[in-house]
Amino acid sequence: MVAIIMKKEDIITLPNGHLRQKSEKIRNVTDGTRQLVADMTAAALDWEDSRPHEISAALAAVQIDRLERVVIVRSDFDSKESREFTVLVNPEIVKYEGKLEADYEGCLSVKDVYGKVPRYTKIRVKALDAEGNAIRFKASGFLARVIQHEIDHTNGIVFVDHIRETTDAFYTLDSKGELQPLNYDEHVKENSILWD
Image 1 (cartoon, rainbow, N blue to C red):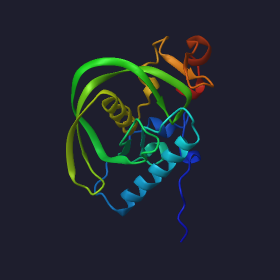
Image 2 (cartoon, rainbow, N blue to C red):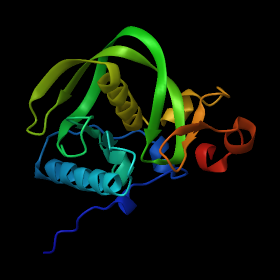
Image 3 (cartoon, helix red, strand yellow):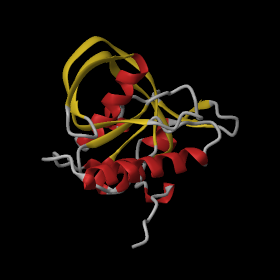
């Protein structure tokens, strides 16, 4: 049997309705779960390799059209050379801490749109690792933001849903990799790709 390697083209994007569906809890971590993680990692890295100004910070299983509560998070956000991800199965935030702070987010499943999204600066998380062991940890800063974004995916929420009515929160990347504001009325308000 020939193994099929996931590519960036396997990442679904809005307006695909599966992105707004809740994912199913994993009952047992199996070889099938680990294959799912390998597929997610391959797709995330293939996407990153096509983007000169961005890293693939994380990915949820729903983004490769698998409605399962599995998330991978980049182990090192500062280096494209480090291509390792941490696996979180059935991740849950057990406590929000710190303060709400708005900062920029993008998403592999939302083409060409970025947003300034409010998130908690500190969280406590429980999940299973790739072997099915229970883990608990604290996250802060960018890691906390990324985990909240990915757990939203498992609950059928996309980052733009948090800022739908915030007219000055939407951006796009220019050819130099710089964020530029989007005109809300022209590009966001009635955008059928984002909202239908």
